[in-house]
Image (cartoon, rainbow, N blue to C red):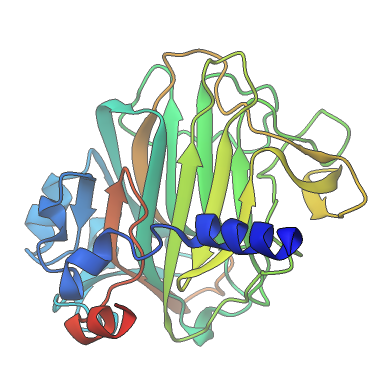
Length: 315
């Protein structure tokens, strides 16, 4: 009986608040007015206005507003970014936030990967992270280890078959070759709740980052949802598993996860949003694309876009 009670309490705590901010704003209408929302982007006011909100815009001519939007969204437009093989690699929107966000932050967005891109995906996701000091353009420095002053977090396709996983850069990251070269670490692929990329379908991605505090502690956390389903939660002492080079594998009989030391100085904040489409694999002359919509950054769990009927049914 005690064990059953403990399991019920654990499930309640895991799902507590999972209705999220979106449950208060049917169709995401006016969600930007919520006091816990820090930033919202729905691509509704035309490209010039959209571009004006970002500090670095790559390949404006490759971007357009599209009438294809996620189900239940009140909006009428999404952002479409296109590439042409041998000519360009896509484009991006990058925004810096001053002074940035501390403590626990959630970012939710919708993304649609077309099946014609299968086999050509490289980096295609919404990234959030920080630079110390803050800068107004992306400077990923891929492959570098010992990266104090830089943090980047994304959940994206990690191969060309549609496996979803994390791509993480932080000071405590692991190397794939013994320490001379580091690329984004993956803690999500192979998790028991892992989900595949859904081609030609709007997917809802949400990522929670809890910054370590103080900067000397490894008590940072990461939590991910895909289409409202929790994919995983990693923090100091959970889950159990082990690193194999730069990939974390869950294993109940292995030691607990050590937690994230996302930053080594208290001045580091989550201070950028990077809406990225990087396709350097398309054959010459061949064009592919990606679509994004309904991006929200908040202090609390957001959840997928809901209708008034969805909300009533869940009460």
